[in-house]
Length: 244
Ligand SMILES: N[C@@H](CCC(=O)N[C@@H](CS)C(=O)NCC(=O)O)C(=O)O
Figure 1 (cartoon, rainbow, N blue to C red):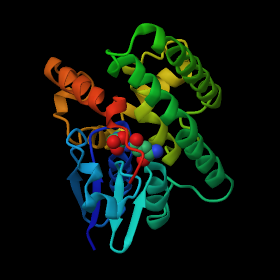
Figure 2 (figure 1 turned 90 degrees about the horizontal axis):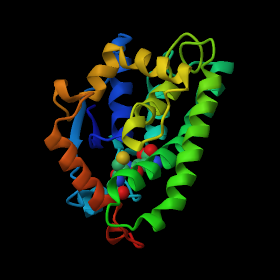
Figure 3 (figure 1 turned 30 degrees about the vertical axis):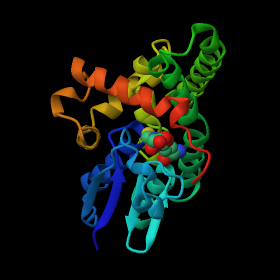
Protein backbone atom coordinates (compact mmCIF):
# COMPACT_ATOMS: atom_id res chain seq x y z
CA UNK A 1 0.00 0.00 0.00
CA UNK A 2 1.27 3.46 -0.83
CA UNK A 3 2.17 5.67 2.14
CA UNK A 4 1.76 9.40 1.90
CA UNK A 5 4.11 11.90 3.47
CA UNK A 6 2.63 15.36 3.81
CA UNK A 7 5.64 17.54 4.25
CA UNK A 8 7.76 20.55 3.27
CA UNK A 9 11.46 21.25 2.77
CA UNK A 10 12.27 22.10 6.41
CA UNK A 11 14.42 20.44 9.12
CA UNK A 12 11.46 18.50 10.55
CA UNK A 13 10.42 17.46 7.05
CA UNK A 14 13.92 16.39 5.95
CA UNK A 15 14.25 13.97 8.87
CA UNK A 16 11.64 11.68 7.34
CA UNK A 17 13.03 11.90 3.81
CA UNK A 18 16.46 10.98 5.15
CA UNK A 19 14.95 8.04 7.08
CA UNK A 20 13.22 6.68 3.96
CA UNK A 21 16.43 7.00 1.94
CA UNK A 22 18.51 5.30 4.66
CA UNK A 23 16.04 2.37 4.71
CA UNK A 24 16.32 2.08 0.93
CA UNK A 25 20.12 2.26 1.22
CA UNK A 26 19.98 -0.73 3.60
CA UNK A 27 18.19 -2.70 0.86
CA UNK A 28 14.87 -2.70 2.69
CA UNK A 29 11.80 -2.87 0.50
CA UNK A 30 9.90 0.19 1.58
CA UNK A 31 6.31 0.74 0.37
CA UNK A 32 5.93 3.31 -2.30
CA UNK A 33 5.90 6.83 -0.83
CA UNK A 34 3.87 9.65 -2.26
CA UNK A 35 5.29 13.00 -1.21
CA UNK A 36 2.83 15.80 -0.92
CA UNK A 37 4.28 19.27 -0.44
CA UNK A 38 2.28 21.42 1.95
CA UNK A 39 2.44 25.15 1.29
CA UNK A 40 3.02 26.50 4.80
CA UNK A 41 3.13 30.12 3.65
CA UNK A 42 -0.38 29.83 2.25
CA UNK A 43 -1.58 28.15 5.42
CA UNK A 44 -2.35 24.78 3.80
CA UNK A 45 -1.59 23.17 7.18
CA UNK A 46 -4.77 24.78 8.52
CA UNK A 47 -7.04 23.28 5.84
CA UNK A 48 -9.79 20.84 6.86
CA UNK A 49 -8.10 18.13 4.81
CA UNK A 50 -4.72 18.54 6.52
CA UNK A 51 -6.31 18.86 9.95
CA UNK A 52 -8.18 15.58 9.43
CA UNK A 53 -4.74 13.89 9.32
CA UNK A 54 -2.97 16.02 11.89
CA UNK A 55 -4.90 17.99 14.48
CA UNK A 56 -1.68 19.81 15.42
CA UNK A 57 -1.60 21.44 11.94
CA UNK A 58 2.13 21.13 11.39
CA UNK A 59 4.23 19.13 8.94
CA UNK A 60 5.31 16.37 8.66
CA UNK A 61 2.51 13.85 8.86
CA UNK A 62 2.65 10.28 7.60
CA UNK A 63 -0.51 8.67 6.27
CA UNK A 64 -0.26 4.88 6.18
CA UNK A 65 -3.73 3.55 5.33
CA UNK A 66 -5.87 4.13 8.40
CA UNK A 67 -2.91 5.25 10.50
CA UNK A 68 -1.93 8.92 10.69
CA UNK A 69 1.31 9.75 12.46
CA UNK A 70 2.20 13.33 13.38
CA UNK A 71 5.47 14.51 15.03
CA UNK A 72 8.64 13.85 13.02
CA UNK A 73 10.27 11.77 15.76
CA UNK A 74 7.18 9.57 16.15
CA UNK A 75 7.29 9.05 12.37
CA UNK A 76 10.97 7.99 12.60
CA UNK A 77 10.08 5.53 15.36
CA UNK A 78 7.05 4.28 13.38
CA UNK A 79 9.18 3.61 10.30
CA UNK A 80 11.93 2.11 12.46
CA UNK A 81 9.44 -0.38 13.91
CA UNK A 82 7.65 -1.08 10.63
CA UNK A 83 10.96 -1.81 8.86
CA UNK A 84 13.29 -3.36 11.45
CA UNK A 85 16.95 -2.43 10.84
CA UNK A 86 20.01 -0.94 12.50
CA UNK A 87 18.30 2.45 12.29
CA UNK A 88 16.28 1.45 15.36
CA UNK A 89 18.54 -1.13 17.00
CA UNK A 90 17.33 -3.74 19.46
CA UNK A 91 18.26 -4.42 23.09
CA UNK A 92 20.10 -1.81 25.14
CA UNK A 93 20.93 0.22 22.03
CA UNK A 94 17.24 0.66 21.30
CA UNK A 95 16.97 2.73 24.47
CA UNK A 96 20.09 4.64 23.58
CA UNK A 97 18.49 5.61 20.26
CA UNK A 98 15.06 6.39 21.73
CA UNK A 99 16.29 8.60 24.56
CA UNK A 100 18.32 10.72 22.15
CA UNK A 101 15.37 10.82 19.78
CA UNK A 102 13.19 12.24 22.57
CA UNK A 103 16.01 14.55 23.62
CA UNK A 104 15.88 16.02 20.13
CA UNK A 105 12.10 16.40 20.16
CA UNK A 106 12.00 18.03 23.60
CA UNK A 107 15.13 20.17 23.34
CA UNK A 108 17.06 20.60 20.10
CA UNK A 109 14.07 21.24 17.81
CA UNK A 110 12.33 23.83 20.02
CA UNK A 111 15.53 25.63 21.06
CA UNK A 112 17.22 25.72 17.64
CA UNK A 113 13.87 26.53 16.02
CA UNK A 114 13.19 29.45 18.36
CA UNK A 115 16.75 30.74 18.01
CA UNK A 116 16.35 30.59 14.24
CA UNK A 117 13.09 32.53 14.39
CA UNK A 118 14.49 35.34 16.55
CA UNK A 119 17.75 35.49 14.56
CA UNK A 120 16.31 35.40 11.05
CA UNK A 121 12.63 36.05 10.95
CA UNK A 122 11.74 38.79 13.40
CA UNK A 123 13.16 41.88 11.78
CA UNK A 124 10.17 43.93 12.85
CA UNK A 125 10.60 43.10 16.52
CA UNK A 126 12.71 45.75 18.32
CA UNK A 127 16.19 44.62 19.46
CA UNK A 128 15.37 45.18 23.16
CA UNK A 129 12.44 42.78 22.88
CA UNK A 130 14.63 40.16 21.21
CA UNK A 131 17.66 40.40 23.51
CA UNK A 132 16.41 38.05 26.23
CA UNK A 133 15.12 35.21 23.97
CA UNK A 134 18.20 35.49 21.77
CA UNK A 135 20.50 35.09 24.77
CA UNK A 136 18.38 32.36 26.35
CA UNK A 137 17.97 30.21 23.23
CA UNK A 138 21.54 30.93 22.10
CA UNK A 139 23.05 29.76 25.40
CA UNK A 140 20.78 26.75 25.73
CA UNK A 141 21.42 25.79 22.09
CA UNK A 142 25.15 25.87 22.70
CA UNK A 143 24.76 23.84 25.90
CA UNK A 144 22.80 21.20 23.96
CA UNK A 145 25.49 21.10 21.28
CA UNK A 146 28.11 20.57 24.00
CA UNK A 147 26.05 17.70 25.43
CA UNK A 148 26.02 16.12 21.97
CA UNK A 149 29.73 16.83 21.59
CA UNK A 150 30.51 14.80 24.73
CA UNK A 151 28.18 12.03 23.62
CA UNK A 152 30.02 11.77 20.29
CA UNK A 153 33.48 11.59 21.88
CA UNK A 154 35.17 8.48 20.45
CA UNK A 155 32.19 7.38 18.38
CA UNK A 156 31.03 7.94 14.83
CA UNK A 157 27.32 8.08 15.54
CA UNK A 158 25.14 8.54 18.62
CA UNK A 159 24.63 4.79 19.17
CA UNK A 160 28.18 3.88 18.17
CA UNK A 161 29.19 2.54 14.77
CA UNK A 162 25.91 2.87 12.90
CA UNK A 163 23.66 5.76 12.10
CA UNK A 164 20.29 5.56 13.85
CA UNK A 165 17.02 7.47 14.08
CA UNK A 166 18.65 9.61 16.80
CA UNK A 167 21.27 10.96 14.36
CA UNK A 168 18.60 11.40 11.68
CA UNK A 169 16.45 13.48 14.05
CA UNK A 170 19.24 15.70 15.36
CA UNK A 171 21.25 16.27 12.19
CA UNK A 172 18.93 18.63 10.25
CA UNK A 173 18.96 21.12 13.15
CA UNK A 174 22.68 20.94 13.90
CA UNK A 175 23.65 21.32 10.25
CA UNK A 176 21.75 24.63 10.22
CA UNK A 177 23.91 26.19 12.96
CA UNK A 178 25.05 29.07 10.76
CA UNK A 179 21.46 29.83 9.92
CA UNK A 180 20.37 29.91 13.58
CA UNK A 181 23.72 31.52 14.57
CA UNK A 182 24.50 29.00 17.28
CA UNK A 183 28.23 28.84 16.71
CA UNK A 184 29.37 25.24 16.90
CA UNK A 185 32.95 25.52 15.64
CA UNK A 186 34.38 24.63 19.06
CA UNK A 187 32.26 21.47 19.23
CA UNK A 188 34.82 19.44 17.29
CA UNK A 189 33.00 16.11 17.56
CA UNK A 190 29.73 17.64 16.43
CA UNK A 191 31.43 19.39 13.49
CA UNK A 192 33.06 16.11 12.38
CA UNK A 193 29.75 14.27 12.82
CA UNK A 194 27.89 16.88 10.71
CA UNK A 195 30.37 16.21 7.87
CA UNK A 196 30.17 12.43 8.39
CA UNK A 197 26.37 12.42 8.23
CA UNK A 198 26.32 14.80 5.26
CA UNK A 199 28.66 12.51 3.30
CA UNK A 200 26.11 9.67 3.32
CA UNK A 201 24.42 9.20 -0.08
CA UNK A 202 21.02 8.61 1.56
CA UNK A 203 21.33 11.88 3.47
CA UNK A 204 22.17 13.73 0.28
CA UNK A 205 19.06 12.27 -1.38
CA UNK A 206 16.89 13.06 1.65
CA UNK A 207 18.09 16.67 1.79
CA UNK A 208 17.48 17.15 -1.90
CA UNK A 209 13.77 16.76 -1.35
CA UNK A 210 12.15 19.99 -2.55
CA UNK A 211 15.57 21.50 -3.27
CA UNK A 212 17.72 21.62 -6.43
CA UNK A 213 20.85 19.45 -5.89
CA UNK A 214 23.28 22.36 -6.27
CA UNK A 215 21.46 24.28 -3.54
CA UNK A 216 21.50 21.61 -0.83
CA UNK A 217 24.37 23.29 1.04
CA UNK A 218 24.49 26.74 -0.47
CA UNK A 219 21.17 28.35 -1.18
CA UNK A 220 20.76 30.85 -3.99
CA UNK A 221 20.25 34.49 -2.99
CA UNK A 222 16.68 34.26 -4.24
CA UNK A 223 15.95 31.19 -2.08
CA UNK A 224 17.45 32.92 0.98
CA UNK A 225 15.20 35.90 0.35
CA UNK A 226 12.10 33.77 -0.19
CA UNK A 227 12.84 31.61 2.85
CA UNK A 228 13.39 34.66 5.05
CA UNK A 229 10.09 36.10 3.83
CA UNK A 230 8.15 32.87 4.36
CA UNK A 231 9.80 32.29 7.76
CA UNK A 232 8.78 35.80 8.74
CA UNK A 233 5.17 35.02 7.84
CA UNK A 234 5.14 31.80 9.89
CA UNK A 235 7.07 33.27 12.85
CA UNK A 236 4.87 36.35 13.06
CA UNK A 237 2.52 36.53 16.03
CA UNK A 238 -0.22 37.39 13.53
CA UNK A 239 0.03 33.82 12.24
CA UNK A 240 -0.57 32.36 15.69
CA UNK A 241 -3.92 30.69 16.17
CA UNK A 242 -5.31 29.71 19.51
CA UNK A 243 -8.09 27.54 18.15
CA UNK A 244 -8.10 24.49 15.89
N1 LIG B 1 7.58 18.87 16.89
C1 LIG B 1 7.08 18.89 15.54
C2 LIG B 1 7.33 20.24 14.93
C3 LIG B 1 6.64 20.39 13.60
C4 LIG B 1 6.79 21.80 13.05
O1 LIG B 1 7.00 22.77 13.79
N2 LIG B 1 6.66 21.93 11.73
C5 LIG B 1 6.77 23.24 11.13
C6 LIG B 1 7.71 23.18 9.92
S1 LIG B 1 9.31 22.63 10.36
C7 LIG B 1 5.42 23.71 10.61
O2 LIG B 1 4.63 22.91 10.13
N3 LIG B 1 5.16 25.02 10.72
C8 LIG B 1 3.96 25.61 10.24
C9 LIG B 1 3.22 26.37 11.29
O3 LIG B 1 3.70 26.46 12.42
O4 LIG B 1 2.15 26.89 10.97
C10 LIG B 1 7.76 17.77 14.72
O5 LIG B 1 8.89 17.42 15.05
O6 LIG B 1 7.14 17.26 13.78
